[in-house]
Amino acid sequence: MSTAATTLTPEQKTWQNQLILHEFYGPLPLEPRRPPMRELISTLLSHRTTHADEELAYNRMLAEFGDWDGVLAAPVAALAHAIRTTRWPDTQAPRIQEILARIKAEQGAFTLDFLAAWPAEKGLAWLTAMPGIGLKTASLVLLFNFQKPVLPVDTHVHRVAQRVGMIGPRALVDKAHQVLLAQLPPDPVVLLNFHKHNYWHGQHICFFTQPDCARCPLKGFCTYYLEHYGQPTAEALAATPAHWEKSWGVLLH
Ligand code: SF4
Image 1 (spheres, rainbow, N blue to C red):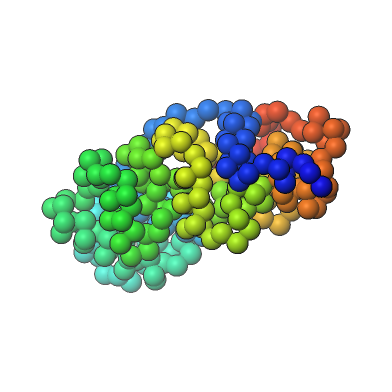
Image 2: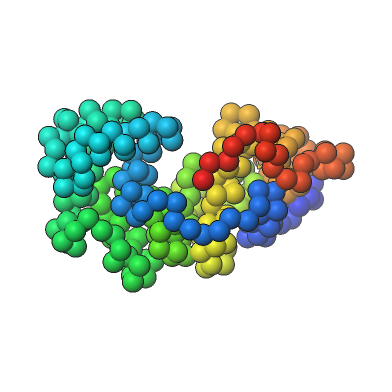
């Protein structure tokens, strides 16, 4: 069967996705959502943890130990207890202390501001050499805080990209980072919008267990849709909402 799902190249699908979701969710400005050190440590705490539990852990940690010096000097078991609402507190506590120790030893202070002057690749290499810091976390810090042309790919972005056919069906997350980044312009604003729009899409429409394809504006060229429902009918396409409705839920930044 020849449809947009089979005739568009992965790169063309990525471009279509970028245009359609931009219209669906609306444009976003590129601005830091929190200071760099907080972005780094909070993202580490957020692994497989809800936003509320991540915030609770972060706030408890600083309330208990005062500042980064206090967190670094804390008994590791006490730090693990303070961040107990996260998924792996016993693993994350020594990682946080090792990250803080390395930053202090190299920079003389708890700052990541030097990353602003570094090329993206150098920053990615430096951050991912830290324990527990993967490409997603490093990319979030570099994109949000330092406007570097990198693309964070989390589980939601990865799932949407795979189902639509923007990446291969067996491409792992790290491969998806490279493939999608090569398909998009090296513009931090475009990359931020692509990341957030696909993150929301995976969270609110392209669910892991049962994607809500009826509401999805990507169905016209989505490989998953074609394989499960066949070519979308004119009625199905016409019934697809053009924009995210506020009544469907809050889109967290
Ligand atoms: S059509 Fe369905 S499977 Fe494809 S991206 Fe949309 S929600 Fe996901």
